[in-house]
Amino acid sequence: MTAILRQLAPTQVQLDIDVPADDLDKARARAVKRLSERLRIPGFRKGHIPRRIIEQHVGAEHIDHEAIEDVIPDVYSKALEEHDLDPVEQPKIDLERVDDGRALKITATVAVRPQITLAPYTDIEVTSPSTNVDEREVDESLEVLRKRAATLEPVANRGVQAGDVVTLDYTGRIDGETFEGGTATDHTTEISPQRFIPGFAEQLYGARAGERRTVTVTFPQEYKPAHLAGKIAVFDVLVRDVKQPVLAPLDDAFAKTVSDLETLAALRNEVRRRLERGAQARAREAVESALLRTLNQSNDFPLPGVLVDRETESILADMQHQVERAGGTWQEYLQERKLNEEQARANARADAERRVKSSLILEQIAKQEKIRVSGEDVDRELDSLARVRGATARATLDDLRSSGNIDRFLNAIRRNKTLGFLVEKAKVAEAPPAESPPPQVTS
Image 1: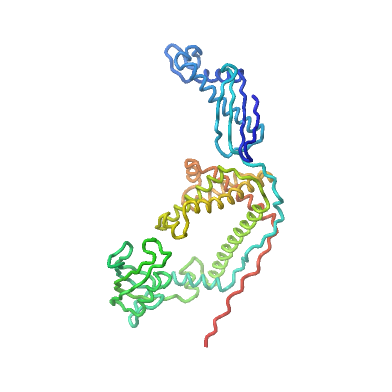
Image 2: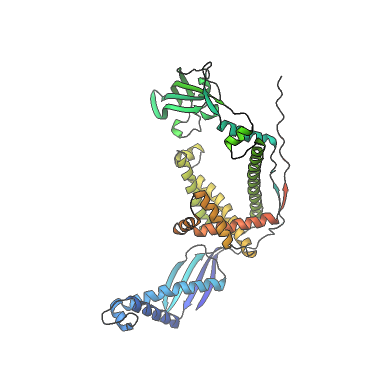
């Protein structure tokens, strides 16, 4: 077998592979042997059927077809290895009979990964966000816990105010007609401007249990669903019940209520550790992003169009799915952002190019540094994923295999290990902590 390489484009090649008559004859013999073992012909045992009998039953063309199907993957794989090519798609194969049909010429056209000569990727200087957690953040987290654990008691001597929990009946109308999502009965919610259409909560202030209010609001221009955006709605609201949250004091008893810890001091320490873990995770992500930006800027090589196309479609599909999950439509999303389909695709393609370039760089670094995925790596990530899914590691692995996502799973592990290597080899300086706002002075 001989294979001649022709460079059609920076990331596309053509392989001209000649399969001699002798090699094709051997492939035909192997095809006859396989057919002899598969066919059931009266008077002959499996594996011992003569070739002429097989040809009478299936035809010489069928044997030839099986031989070629056997030859193509083998010679194509050898040609890739010979020329050190890494394809990113299935090849387009053209066949030509030569030497009176006894030999074969295979033309394989395929997109390949580019040859990458990397710029230096160690000792990159990056700045990490501060991972410092101050007491103010701990206090704010404890206040969130207090609000979650608050008890509710009825309000008798005043009307609704911000922070109360009320039960409402309401019917909304636009141009005199009710609309989907604008009507509810026994709806319990906290009275907070952030939870309602602008102006809604404020118009309920002072209302007492059993009182009716007419509330007029305008939906924001960016409101979803988009058909309500900018519309004026009038709500008939009945305040059925008004309660106020009662916060527990910050003491050891509170710590026992909201956790399995015995003291408030222990709870503060646990909250601080959780905040520090979150800060460290965000800092790590910021450092990784900064390293990838630097590597993208310092390396220049052609990108396989097929990979960019594939990633572009994936980005667009994810965006459309997110829009639909939020209750909108793709056309509404484009209209809100004053985009057409071509502009949205161009934006997605620019993002896809960055992602593909980053992936190729990480793959090349992993190759040069011989970063591999070990059994321990797989077990650890499987256990982590299984905990998230609430399943066993075995069930999670079976699901990854059956869904065809096992390679993606393994590639993600290798990518993360490579990013870990880059972070370890980088020169990371932590930014100073942001200054806390000055205390409020009251007179």
